[in-house]
Image 1 (cartoon, rainbow, N blue to C red):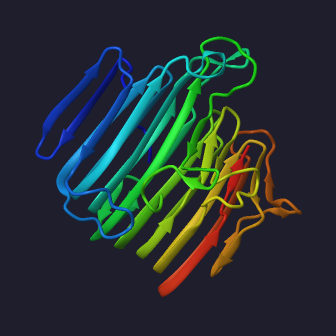
Image 2: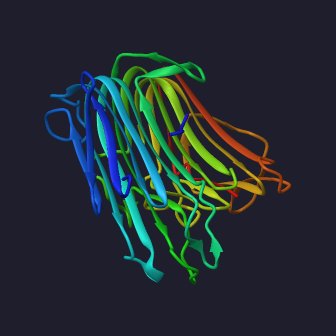
Length: 330
């Protein structure tokens, strides 16, 4: 899946029929790129697109972001901002977002935290990752994409801080605060939407030590995935998470037609699926224990020794939904 502002800021874009555009600034602080025609879609069928492929990589001193939109018809906006010395203990801030639509194509957006700076008095290892993907089609093999007819939209955002010297407090997390105190920070109605013969949605957070949580939806018909707030740190990753229960935040999935939905977590010590959720339709789980806080699978401390999965499915003409699918891997 993933792998993928040089601040000094440089962005390379390939758009339409191979036109290459390079942007640079000194001292650089922001990138703001729009493509395609029309206005930003807020939940209806996207209209008045441009056509082609746009891709770019932005690298700040402590993080890098890659994005692409590749389809017969595309429109969207990508933004990045780097602000040095604006936070506690002189922390440098890097934030980025993508809101886009495609017809008969794919969109991808991911941020990697680079080594550098400090967590308290310890050098920050980097390695955290936030990954978002949606496309009209499916993978018939890990690297074989089969396209399909339909449209999809994505709204995803991430931010991270870097502390230039030892300090008290703070972290080197990648935080995806798509929603703030219950108020949506992005302009689109939902984080991921699809209406296609076949669609694939992937949302993943990965910690420095390899712990990860991933939500995956594949199917044909309509689908809406909202992601609440998520984060990845040196030693844990969580998806659609807030104070364990996420009440009042969007962290839901709904679909019609036919398809499958999964939330999976892998950790060194523990994976937790918190209670306070409601499922409408078929659901099953990998081996776990349960208590008042949620479903658990404990590890031994070895990489990947804890694993927990939740799986749902619906058949042709059916529907499926879950509220609060949050999960944490430690």
